[in-house]
Amino acid sequence: MKNIVFFIMLALSFFLPDIVHGKDYVVRKVINGDTVQLDTGETVKYLGIEAPKLNTKEGGAEFYAREAARYNKKLVFMKKVRLEFDHDKKDPQGRLLAYVFVKNLFVNAELVKLGYAKASVKQPNIKYRETLTSLEEKAIKGDKGLWQETKKDTESYYVGNKRTYTLHRPSCKYVDKIPAKDKIIFRNRADALKIGYTPDKYCKP
Image 1: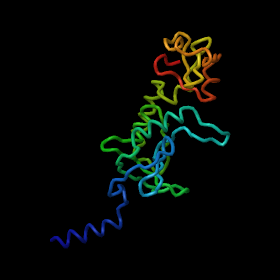
Image 2: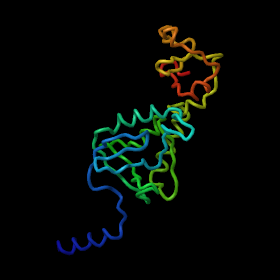
Image 3: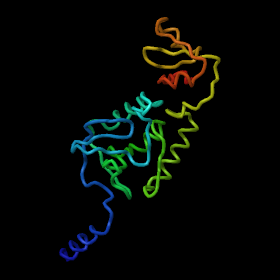
Image 4: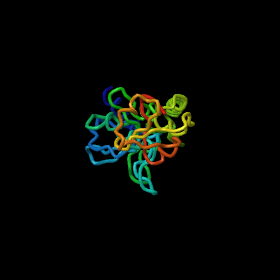
């Protein structure tokens, strides 16, 4: 009986797709908001999401790219991760394409939920399409993270902190604490965000 079960499992292994890596890996390096390097030296691109780019062709980082990279590091750096695959295991660059889990935390989904990444679900890798797109809709409605970039101006001007690259409403309680030499005035949000300023979490400009 045991021999029969063994041969059945062996046969199935040739026909069933390899959905989950059979072991845990440790993240040794965080490259950006959706890409990491494992202790094996392999690079993993998170499947189904797209975080803002740290390095663009024009130079500089996209809005919220640094925040996304920092949060991704907080979630996975030097931690054991489990990889789950979909239809395509690798991209043209040779990177592993995977859904990443730290214990029970679905990292890809967490980044989309909090606005650190956009859902980017493409055929044939659609296993978590509903989950990721639903979380993205909620993030957009809540102006979470990178979705703050498209908010309309509600002030006649904004105050930036040149040292921390944080943008504030003029009425924000933290504005008075900014040294005069570090203050900069913006007539609209877009000008500040374009050069890398991040909206303050307290006053949410």
